[in-house]
Amino acid sequence: MGERRLLDIIIPHGGEPWRVCRPFFDMLRCQRGADFSAVRVIVVHDGCGPWAEELLEGLPVAVSQRSVWMSRGVSGDRMPAGVSAARNWGLKCSDAEWVSFCDADDLYASAWALHCILDALRRPEAADYDLLWNPFYVETAGGRDICGMNWVFVHGKFYRREWLQREGIQFDRRLYYAEDSAFNATVDAAIDHKRIGEIQSDATLYLWTLRPDSVTGRPENQARNVLGLFDRHEIVAEEYRRRGLEGDADALLAKAAWDGFYQCHRTDLDIRDRQRLRARIGRLCAAHDPEIRRVQGEALETVRQASRREAEKKHMDGVPESLFEAWYTAAVTEYGGGTA
Image 1: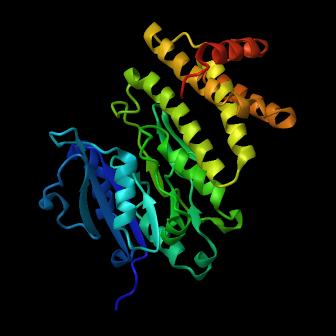
Image 2: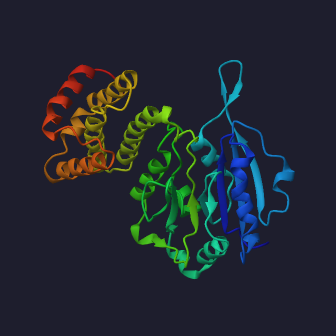
Image 3: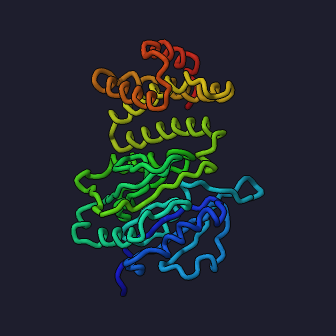
């Protein structure tokens, strides 16, 4: 029996054209010094068929193509199941010791990246960790930034597959946005932080690429993305409560209320989007008013300051904090009795 595979790279593909996805596979062809037998790429096509095999010929690593979709109505028409379902299917198909999640349009940032990753995962001390990470580049309109350890992105992270399985951690299929941060929030809640380690390397290994025409990047989806954030907050709070973290759940819902306060005073959305946003946030506040009200003292101050800092970064801090209580009371009164 051969050595167990060390790493599965799981890539969800939502129908992006091959020209968008090809650079990642071209970068695989450029990798130097890696033990390619230790790694596999699992591409999960979400609501679409596999690529022609000739497009993947000559790759130094094995590629497994799978498809996932959901049926709609009695007609059984196939439609995309979503990025969360695609990543979960990749996890189900994996038998490797470690898994990483890459986007179909991203890149490794160095020809030695895979060598560095596999070398780190194979070291004896890797047995002491369930999550390993490395900083990654974030492409911007003007160049690049470097993103360090965080609980927002899955990029640049390597998860011990059996630990995820044991903890029952998956991507939530109800989310169409911020599913990465919801997944990582559960990891953060479940993991022993002593079992988190950094992969030391002489170069940054991964590049998150900027694609303005992506689903999340399109300006017309701005309001949709914001609404998705509040879905994420409720789902993560639900997960915290399921794991016995009542205080964390309450604090997250209070944070959602304060974030909603700033979002509802935005002026850069049209009237219809502002109404949708107000209704969504109002329902959240009304549905969770007792939990939100439980957050007091130092915990409330921490929440308030965090929301304020985020609002400042997004230039949404023009509304005085003193208006929060009146705004919140009005939202709960208007939407009380509804469900979020």
